[in-house]
Image (cartoon, rainbow, N blue to C red; front, top):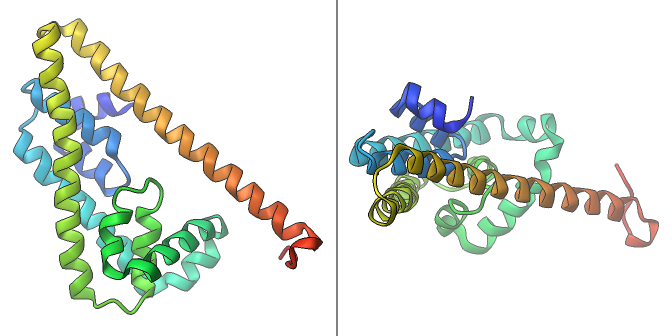
Length: 203
């Protein structure tokens, strides 16, 4: 089921579930539909911020209670964990804001924060602020895109369908780009590890 269908059938529940994971596309779509009067923009932003925050808290809790086992259970997660560690070591709690906008690193970063020595209270407060800012930026991007489309092209249903298709295509393109990039990076790491000249050996 595509994001548009999910939003039309389940509304705010779809926004919550989408942002619980890494759902920019569904949030942009929700903002667009809010501009068309199908959803409340304020409620959409509130639900999106809540979904993102609860998702981060869930992964933080997993990292704090089962972090080591989680990393061993999903070895493909290792590269993302490594990138998150680099950011957290460099920027500390500020990395919470940075990783919010790095596709594919939010879950890994929350797990790493759970593994780290950061105080739980600090993580919860900073993450709540980060999620609220993120939800407003991404949701309003979709909302004002909808308003711009309406001003230029009117309110025809056919125009709405093309605008939604455009959002879906952009979202899918971004997802595919990052997946291909991650796979190439992982393959490069494996080749480097297997190369005896690299000074490492494959596990």
